[in-house]
Length: 135
Image (cartoon, rainbow, N blue to C red; front, side, top):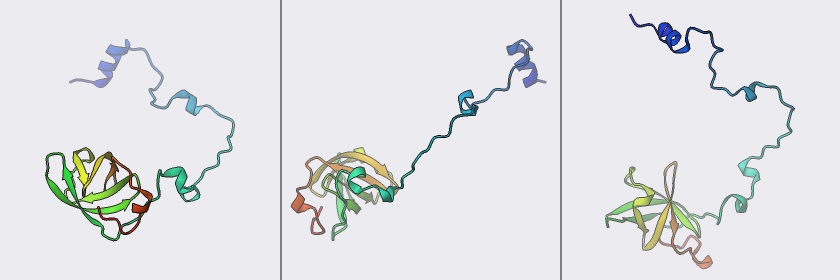
């Protein structure tokens, strides 16, 4: 019967070794205490975390057009001057498959918990940013 001990002894030459650890030795050594101030996201101003403020339009339904020309219904999560977060009816839709949101050309952004973020190729004008916008 095959034994792991015999295989290990064959590889190591039968010499005892220190236990293998995935933790680097530096982490286990004592260090001086460092005073770290943690901040919460609530304490950070939106301008520090976002390129533009988010808003929710009055009409939250829109149409996504894929690069292949397929049209899919979607719900708008939020909008900013630079992009839009949407929840598509097709859960497997990837951000890089979408060419337009409504009539606006977009580029891929990222995936979020309930959908995808798409970046407008031309940012919205300040007067367009509000609940009256229709995408």
